Amino acid sequence: MTVVVPSAVPLSQAVSMRRGLFSFFQATPLRMAEGEALCRPVGGAPEMNVLIVDDSKAMRLIVKRTLRQAGLGDLKVHEAENGRDALNKIDDAKPDLILSDLNMPEMNGMELLQEVRASGSKVKFGLVTSEGSTDVRSAALDAGANFMVVKPFTADSFKAAFEGANGNGIRRGAQAGAGELPTPVAMGGILDGLLSPDVTVKNGKLVRPDARRPVVGVRWGADDGTLEVFACVHVDFAIAAGCALTSLPANSVEGHVKATASSGLPEALASNVNEVFNVLGTLFIGELPGSGKLREVAAPLTAFPDDVTKQVRKPLARLDVEIAVAGYGEGGATFFRLA
Image 1 (cartoon, rainbow, N blue to C red):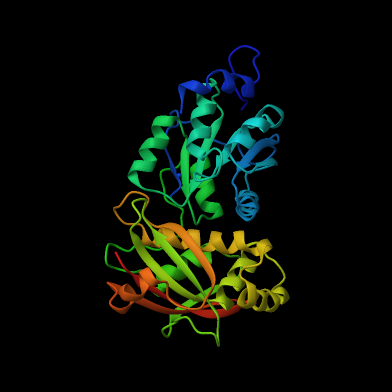
Image 2 (image 1 turned 30 degrees about the vertical axis):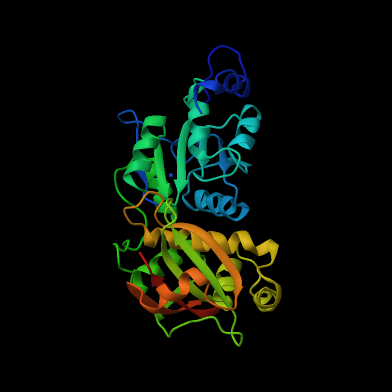
């Protein structure tokens, strides 16, 4: 497979000329020609160029690792941190496949897809996103995406999408409906699919802001500003999960926990922790536009925010869990469903 661009105009120039014309966790192909496979057959296959586009370095690493676990032959992987960066690298990378996150600064995944298709390129394009609503799928289809993979994903998820299969290879807990929260089993399925070490989630005790054991405050909400879920999470778990996400040394957890308790999440680990909570948001997706999006991670949380205090006294639902990440540590979390 090769990138197809009309005449000899480089893709970046073609995109630039047409930029004024255009102002993404289930492995479901969106538009494939009958019998067409996204990837070359495994076994003796020539090298395939893949461009991974995500503003999270941790997520780019996870996508790269999962691609190799899927056993899809020789891969030459290129990386870009947003859509604009991807456009600047396409000519040199000459990708057979582009895998892009949906929400990114400067230029998001949908805008990148539109620009690529506007140039005339037929390169295979997949969106990798925590947003799997019908509206997002329809928009991706209309824009020319070949498939979507919803976070959290597995090697089977990618393999099914690449082969043009209609099956769902995603190990994903059922989403909770309005006024509900997922079960510990569903949450365990999400985390176990995201992190390399084994994860155990069981019923726990109420977690509240407490100086004796620092917590992280996490918000998920919809585009209209509705706060859907608020959580108090022990810093111990947040750091353990963040380190496990990219297989950082387990002996670094204690130091990061102390640093977070005194001055907030270490910059080097913040993107990992945010990504874990971003993926957990797929459990809270409801009917509102943008539902389940991660809105804020505050650490350390010393007291409930003013706009949450009254709501957490009488939430629509509450879930208390204890989460253990094998080899890294454990901690409690309480999730309050507020809308």
